[in-house]
Amino acid sequence: MAALDETDRAILAELRRDARASMTAIAEAVHISRAGAHARIKRLTDAGVITGYTVRTDPVLLGHHASAYVTLAIEQATWQEVSARLRAIPEIEHMALVGGDFDVLLLVRANDARDLRRIVLEDIQAIPSIRSTRTILIFEDFDRA
Image (cartoon, rainbow, N blue to C red):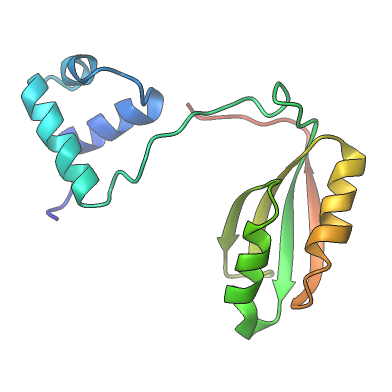
């Protein structure tokens, strides 16, 4: 795929703002024809730039009154096994393999502090290849929507 141009980036910004926007609204917002917007979105999707559409939600209104970033130090050769086990924990909203002082960063959404404790101490720390965890509580979320 050719490099993204300013129009592609503008289309992506519109879709990130509102993935339900009509083709007409996107075309008007980026000053191109409806057919042009449709063709560009299809090209971006076919190339794998657009991988899907999602809904942003308020975690507190969903009942998740305790959220945290949890960092993990793992045994270096066990990422595939660890990631498979972590994917099975439904409260993990996001997972990333990172470089630095720790190996994995998780975003965990829990019903309350007791539930968060269970997830970290019983579910995550039960994975044998995890050497250590560190929990960073989230007091308030901000979305760049």
